[in-house]
Image 1 (cartoon, rainbow, N blue to C red):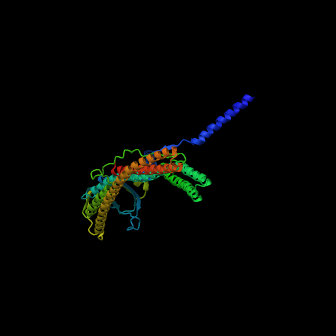
Image 2 (cartoon, rainbow, N blue to C red; image 1 turned 90 degrees about the vertical axis):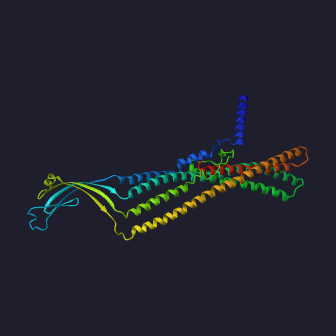
Image 3 (cartoon, helix red, strand yellow; image 1 turned 90 degrees about the horizontal axis):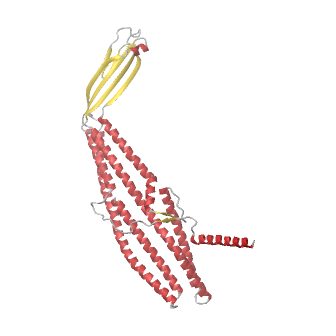
Length: 448
């Protein structure tokens, strides 16, 4: 009995120790580490913009097929069943009947049931390149939609880089502030002891207390902002991220190799889009001008005709080959109320507008790339300074630790130096993150 009680106590003690260890380490849930590349891959899968852009490519391809269809002849079939009454005869047309052909239509001047089946074929012989220009425009549109899809990828990646960079900085800040909080609390406790012994004022204690509260509030603010970032990332990836168990991984390009941005490797997709728009508009203008020229077509018609004066079914049974017609038609618009000229003027102005937009797109792209490159140079120079500063702060902390052990300085100085070291490490991390993010942005703009 005593043995069982002892074993039960040992078991409860073991459970208590395990729970205490879990509480100390906080390992109730495994932290999920996400990387930028992983987030970007998932975003591409769920992005509505990319899906819409992809559909636009499909639409443009069907429009190209539609434009090419004008190269082929048009074949139509028609069927007519009617009753004709000759109103020129009081008795309903007891006299002889006559049949006349006008164009591709058969006309009967008698009171009778009649049926007509005909097959018509028309083919565009010559239109001075109007159809060809429409096909050119459709091909340029397919090319443009493919470039717009690539531009959507670039825009998506740039937006995601901003969100991920912000989240990574907040993630690092929360960790650093949580490291600083125990140090600040320790400084507050020291001031309390010194105040009790009469070596510190109430004002100094209040200052340390305020510092602790500021750190706590800053941690909360950063956690709120980090939660917003995780919500944004969730909207991109369609996955839920828990602020307590989510870690953002550093960018993988920590070697800081900056891609060279020269004129030969700059992939300005918006510039290409405007260039294609200009080429499409030029083709449309040429097509509009050529609509003033004659349009020559070939047409043929094959007709089956049957009629009977008194019975509909007999008229159907009487259907037989009646005529075959073939001819060439030419049409020339002589006057359209200056509509064509007005459309040509409109297209010329739209062409000038596109030219200016293309130039603006080139300027904006070069400006964005130059700003990123210049900022990156500044950030890299800052990194060198942070490297030196971190070394000096670490060295000072080591010296203060040594002096503290030899009772030549107070512990508060050591704790304050620890805070300073954590702050400088955080600034160093922020700088490193911004450098890596900027390199990613330059690579994205260059298409590398």
